[in-house]
Image 1 (cartoon, rainbow, N blue to C red):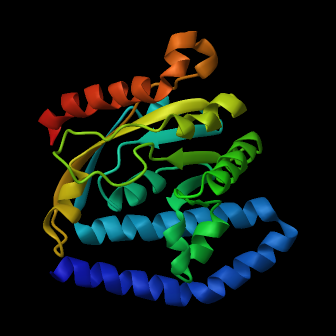
Image 2 (cartoon, one colour; image 1 turned 90 degrees about the vertical axis):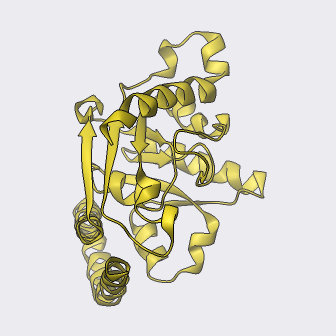
Image 3 (cartoon, rainbow, N blue to C red; image 1 turned 180 degrees about the vertical axis):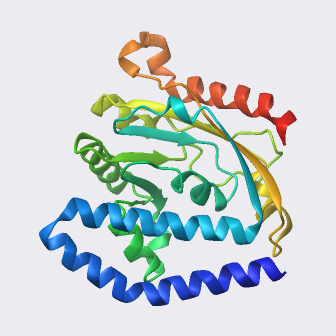
Length: 244
């Protein structure tokens, strides 16, 4: 229980002490938006790394050299809130995550998320969902990567299981022309969700796959892009389970 207490305390202090920081970054952004954006990115990445350290998470990273130095669409399997901390703490450039709209309920947290180009998806309103995807496409065209979990929600099933991937998630890559970078994660549910309310020292594996450009795929594969990417991630997590 000691780990969850320290994580909760650190998160509370970060959000509280971050109030004036948000104001300072807003002022800096009035004069130099890029500098403010990157400062905000590095501040949150530092906080995420501290939380991972407190939680006792040991990470084996494979294939990070596969991520091209350009805006991309990151996709991944999703079994834990810690998936976001693990992957976001490694982003070299500005990256917005697509989150559920319910995250807007949390003050300060939502303010940091908005500063970091996160988007809030209403899964029950197709019209609003389309607006979110169009905004994500615009972000990519303006140099900001997007991360989305195509399963649509956290999967609490068997360790190597995957929920169906929603094809709509891939419209971001189709319409912007950016690369799709698969992220395959093993054992992240064992950090927290697998044994609530404890946080447990855990070894996880994160592998970045080779970039996929939809323009290079045949018509049939494009039509079933969700299934295609799901199979890549399924094969990878099965392969990496031996490393956990």
